[in-house]
Length: 327
Image (cartoon, rainbow, N blue to C red; front, side, top):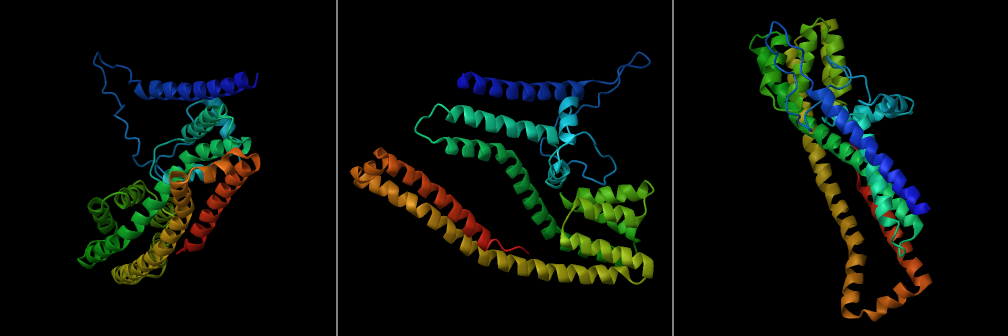
């Protein structure tokens, strides 16, 4: 009976994901109606699954959480779902919240179904593995977000240098920022271009730059936006302010690099301490297998193995937390 229930949960989750994928492709591949006897060019283009999306505050903002109406209404009632949407946008991924949620449910259900027949594994281990598998898609999003924001921090001082030189050459701020947006690679270039387009559509610089700070939650970007907004109110030589900001941010980036290199030593030490007990157990199993079979065959010894494994994982997480320096 329990097996049928698990299979039913897995099948229902799979059908939801399959329906979402089919509906997405059908709505995305519909062409525009014909006019004057000639077919119009379709708006559907090949999908780049890792292309940047319109973040909050952009020119075009998608309000739906999922292409499935029922799932969209259900997700809209979940507290904190906007945080996941912002994380997806800041990671530069065009995944919807409904898609990432369906992937999490499918991964968790599939892992639980695969592990359930394994009688040697305790129930809490099966539930824990299913929870880890379910959180893996969101952890991938968080990792891509972190790497993208680090790349923003590296690109921003050079972009400010270019902006300062362009304004010193006599270009106004709008033209200089447009030039920087065209010359800078992703991910910074498209975000600056979006800010320029918002200004061209009638928004004030204060609002457009505020949207940039919302889309890119980086301290350097917030400082630049605050400096430009203050200069528009008080006046002054903006190119000198931007040049000083670029110099200060470059020194700050160098200091952050030194701190990360020092913290990397602690992270490597923690990884070695985590792998070392497993390596020693593997060597003992190869040299003298009977010494470990006592623990494996005895019920109390079996429980001690799982407790030791859990403590090892917890210790690794604590060490990584200690050496994770927030800059």
